[in-house]
Length: 356
Image (cartoon, rainbow, N blue to C red; front, side):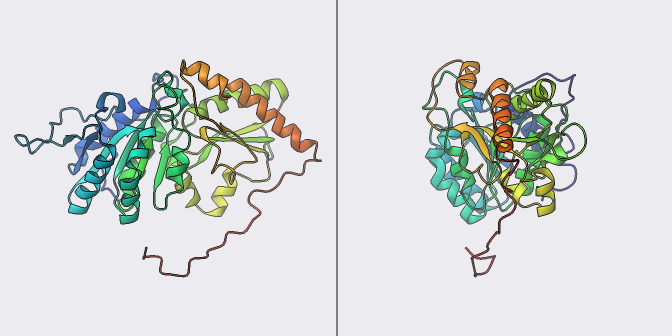
């Protein structure tokens, strides 16, 4: 883990004062906040530095004539980029990071898998993390990539919803020396969150909007990244228009959340309350946390991101509508909501926990 002071310059988003921005810009701010305190940090982008917002300001390029430079111009070679980062980590004394679009992680997956297998804490900055990138279209819009990475052992995948959660993402990434971390970032601005928390985000998932009144909520939304904001808007609409008391859970990192105690997990996601997951990515993987899902079941489209998010159902109006339908669905079943937490967890591996 990083020593004291490394995270002191990470900014805190002040709701009502600071301006909305994309999480890739928040990532850039965090990268530049920690870089002066982590001299071993070294890396770059696959020819997408400007788009990935992965430049360390004032840092020179690593070249033959400037060997003290820490920025590496990897070029359009994602697999080689990730493999080089593995080599730098294995050599020692260097904490490598690299960046590209999330969809292009597919080109790097073999080397990223090697990071996880070898317990190399490489930091992967992956921007343009959903259909919300807009006109570049389905070739650039990741659908299955988040679940592909989440399915990989010893890999943390963090999709922050704002600056506070992005600060947590960098703290998680730098502290997890033996686990690579993928920091997923939006191209477009995300909605400011009034009650986001860096400390709470460090637990992988937390309640960002508490339900009104006493007793269990009528509905729980669980989301990540850019979809947390629409869930907050949907929760407000459901309360004012239908008296449906909703909780909104932000889950930037499933892996870290699942490392928390069962008591904490159940306090955030009760399991026996209708729960709707919302993420502009594959639905797979969210079934363990939710009774129904709003996700991607087909490839994306080329168009303005606002239109795409509406077409595919990620606008606040559809999120509220589907939440209301989910509540009504279980009311029609006499309120019998399957408890997602009422199931056993089996440990089947009999070998040493330290071996591969």
